[in-house]
Image 1: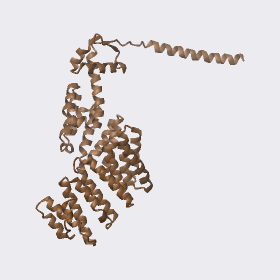
Image 2 (image 1 turned 135 degrees about the vertical axis):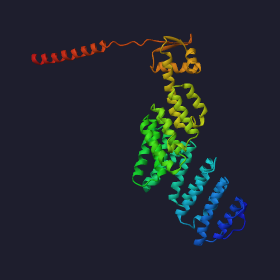
Image 3 (image 1 turned 90 degrees about the vertical axis):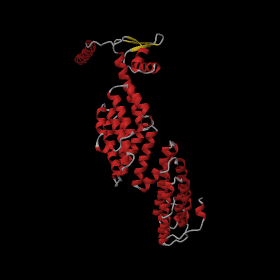
Image 4 (image 1 turned 180 degrees about the horizontal axis):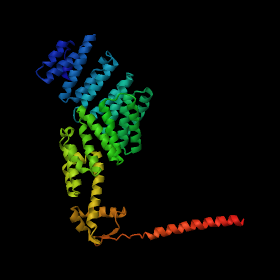
Length: 426
């Protein structure tokens, strides 16, 4: 704990707060604020001043990236929480947890902090605050890919919140559950949780940021089902909501909008969307990455596609949603290019095909064998000679199916006549 906290307290007055604001550096200001919140006075004015001191101290510690001191501050404030209303306690606790989240590289600290606060709120019987801290903890566990622990926590929390009918929190938790099931590749459950979130949201006023999150998740799930047109409309709604709030998630919504256009063979529209008034302020690596992919797709060039993947690895391959769809797009593009190249041949060296498409031989050989198994074309690989042999597709004469259908119909007529004659003879 800070040495400033061990020194004598300052009276919780407006003058003390002003003194902290006028301090010559951040460490002196922090030291004064620590001393203010140590004032043992519990009068209404003193409590109000301490609340202001806590807010200022939290902001100062955040600017200085002192995450461990913020954690210690929460522990130190526990006696103070018994003197103020529970709603104010919840606001301060969530404010400090949010402040720790703003400091980079503190995900493990945030998880342990939330676990500590859950234990404290359970002991103090502060259900309202505990449920919100548990929801925050589940979100952190999801980010850390600790799916089993997050799912266990959410399952119990959903049952509890449904009993209390806290709709706003229920929307948060159902959305979290949808994201969790999506991460576990369980699409039916992800959709069911999203539907539950929408149902709860329809019964109450949902803040624009929350509505944007619902639309973003809806777009992601529709894109996963290859319904890119519907996904685009959801991403557009999310983009508008986040853009109005200057939320950093707006760039992701824009990125996924561009992805949808590429996936539905409308890569030419990407440049128009990027140059629109709302999109111009988001021009940067993410938008450049999608523009490079759109250009490669328009030119049907695998070389440009691979260059884009290599140049914008962080924006394309490290984003799991974009990476999944671009893998599918790359496969489609590769198949189209290979079919076009082998079309004139009945027998061709695999090495020659690899040179024409500018890809490694083993990669091309593997893809060709997969295409043969998927019946994309008729052929076989002669690995001894290193050749691909393409067979002429046998065209089925139209007369054969028609003949079979005629024979089948004659058979039905004969059976019908036999049944009639059997009745007459009876």
